[in-house]
Image (cartoon, rainbow, N blue to C red):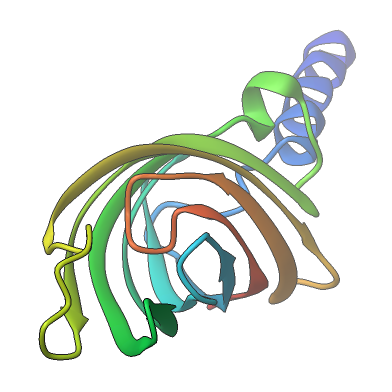
Length: 165
């Protein structure tokens, strides 16, 4: 009997040390800044745990910038609305829950507005992309994140904060 209790406790403790950072049914708010060639994106998003190690979410981003073309100044703004799905590698790689390493896909629609008469390459449309990222949680709720990837309106990368609730 003691042998079985020892085996069960070892299995249970190994599962606890590699828990998914976002549990099934748990939500996480994300917000921060992005990197791109077209202005400084600001983003907010929400992730939801649908299965162990798998989350889905949505994101809203905004950026604006201006440029001069042959003496004419144009102002641009880009609004992005996207959805994402991520696989979190904590269980697979036996990473503790204070860290979160993930990769996934995103698809979104962006609306590109430019001041009158602009004939450049800005156009609204659908973006599809990949992302890879990581988080470090300071406590049970708050963490910092870094993500690299592209395809949506905050493409290039992002840095920000996460709040689990």
